[in-house]
Image 1: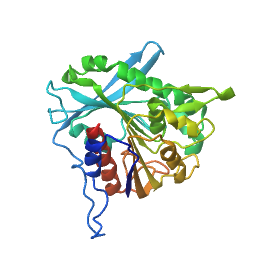
Image 2: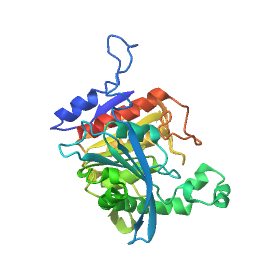
Image 3: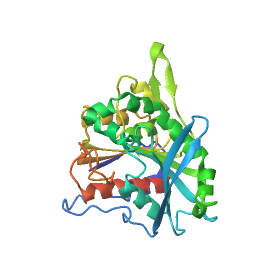
Length: 319
């Protein structure tokens, strides 16, 4: 495992926290166990609730899962408010996945909100599911491609709806801290995070379009996209906020791109508070971060899961 930073200045606190993950064995003892930033399970028990919110502007029902710590802990401010993470699932996934990550963050004091995007297989009928012949065909289907720009609107709607979420879940009344907001995602969810962070898409006649939202203060991108038909080196220049990117040597794309393709995002990030966790041998599911099995996920590896969740926790805590 390698941990790199492209930080320029002003990062003492972040670097102390992130390097405290100590993913490297000590130089004098190559067999020393890796030291984690924190225990994967934090001091708080967690609770979850599912709810649906209606986006009147888009005539859309959005299903959410919200997970939070039952007790106030060190992540709370003096008024008992809790920092918020909005997390975007991979293509075909749903708000019910990624329990290994979500439970870790929530048990350490974060409220995590997971929307189910319109490409979710959970929204298909049984007959429609039977028509899916391969992962590649599903990922290239018109609905999945159309959701690329609908997903950032889902995230924007979730952030706009924090007060409504507090109304729907009495345990969270007055506790969601909109000033301490982060966003993350895996695979297609990492691309959604890229768009929220300021990635520009190249269009016809040199025109570019963005779906940026300035409210998330820090962004977690697990298996983000590299360059392609609508993404070039210039696309990444607008990503100026703190980013933690995570990928691995076996993190191939389900649509055929090699693991090296994901590193193009890292190579094109502008200078600043950018961090890369690269795990040798890690597959697309990083040993089980989604909590579900699917084609191309790779083998189970609890150590990889722990590296992802504790390094990401250190990132959230730093920012």
